[in-house]
Image (tube, rainbow over all chains, first blue to last red; front, side, top):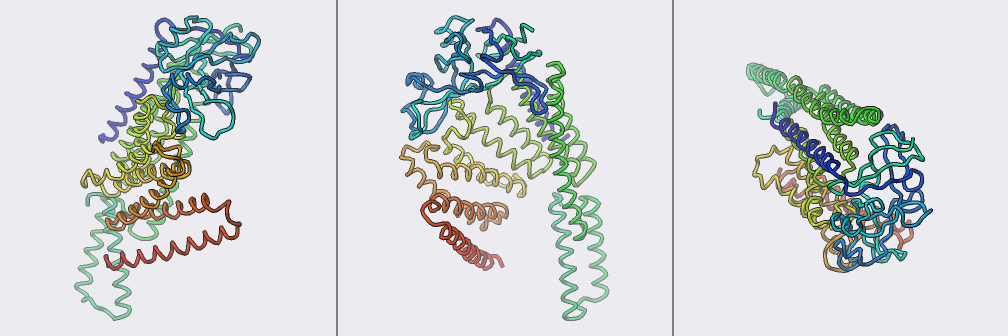
Amino acid sequence: MKRGAQVAIAVTLLTCGSAVAQGMWNQSGPATGSVTLTLGREASLVSGREGNTAQSVRLWLGPEGVTSAPVTDRAWLDAVGFGTPGEIATARHGYAVLDVGAEPGADGLTVVDIGREPAELLARYPDRSRYLVTPASIRSRIPGAQGDSLGTIYLTPNALHVPRGAQAGDRVEVRTGRSGIPYVVGGRGR
Amino acid sequence: MASRTEAQQRADRIQAFRAELGEVEGELGPILSEETRSRLNAHHDATLATLAAQWDIDRNAGEHQLSLGMRVASLVGAIALVAAVVTFFYRIWGLIPTAAQLLIVTVLPIAFVLGTDYATRHERKHYFATITVLLAVGSFALALAVIAGIYNLPPSPFATVAWGVFTLALGLGYRFGLLVYAGMLVLAFGLVGVLLRLQGLDWSPDSGRLDLHLLMGLLVVAMPSLLRGRLDENLAEMVRLAGMTLAAAAIVFCAGNGRLSVLPMRPGVVEGIYDVAGFGLGAVMLWLGLRNRWRWSARAAGGFLVLFTYIKAFDWWWELLPNYVFFLILGAIAIGALVVLRRIRMSVREVTP
């Protein structure tokens, strides 16, 4: 077998193995957060679209279908390392804190804080059944752009894999793992 | 002969020699004695037979056309089969347990790599190997996407680097130029992503800091020269093309939006700098390509210069000028480019008769 094939096989085993290990390690051990979401109110179920039989849950950052949130506090941008606001069009990797019960009766989750490290945010928001910490991409506002927002927050990823079947109207439990990556435990209330 | 390309070039030279000899003898009459002619023909026939047996080269124009058709068919077939594998997996993965999903996506690329190795041992022209190797590359991408999807892993530049290394390893190992180009491009893009990610920055290209992509592209262009001939020239050209693609993309975007650069200047000034950089880089690459006989690099540089000129013409004049004047200028630019390229062609002909 040629060396190119040997390298390709080694890369496959190494990459797939490390990705699976990362995912399993995140989901092993005690969860650092656990919130329950109602499908159709705080998240939507994505399933059976375009020939894809897998299911995922898309978190709402506002009314139905909204998957990004504005940055309203200048300190948030500082927290993830931005310099002068909007000096260049760029984005930073960070974590967002989502509040499940910020506004009773309102649809969607509310972003209440962002930061660089999930541990800091978990310490600041200790109510594990109310706050969900999740990876996010934070983009600063481009100078000249319209609106009051200082930037935009996107969840990465913005859809969580559902290991077992779920239906619209179900309640699903979303936990935050050891690495700060959220995951769905399974459908509930069927 | 060290490669099939060299074998094909030898066969092409023999065919060209025979054709030209026929033309000359048609004009001047027989110029070779019967003994010389028969010795020459016997030697060429034996050489062609040996090359055909060893490398499966095309011995005439008809075979060449058929080979071209078969290459296109294998490429189209490979793309269709990759689409079939990916869409079929997405059709069934919700119906099978997670462990089976992980097992399938991990085994698939390995199986196709082994299939590629088998195919390259049993056919010299790599028609079926093209199919299996593209299936391997597509399956590897599927594995990365599925595992990231199952565990909700954020997009990672390390995964992009791994995909690039995988593709490049197969391209270099089995001499697939297209894979060397794609693998090098993905690897270079991923490495820039790793640098950005280590600084806590989002690594998607629309997040800016494209100067890093430009520098990485230039480094990739220089890589074959830094390796000092350890890379086959055809594959070296693919590496240069990958670097040029990355650098050209960074220049085009920064010239259009100065905020995508880290240069500490006003966006308008940055855009002006990148305008100059675009024309400068294109001209330098064209000169280097012609000087060093890098055929693909020279063609790509010429193409980039023309395309960049049109892009800038659109940026500068589309809103200022009436449509007919704008298109008139584009036509004039095309004629100007023809005149310049014709002069370059003539000067190259004088240097290399």
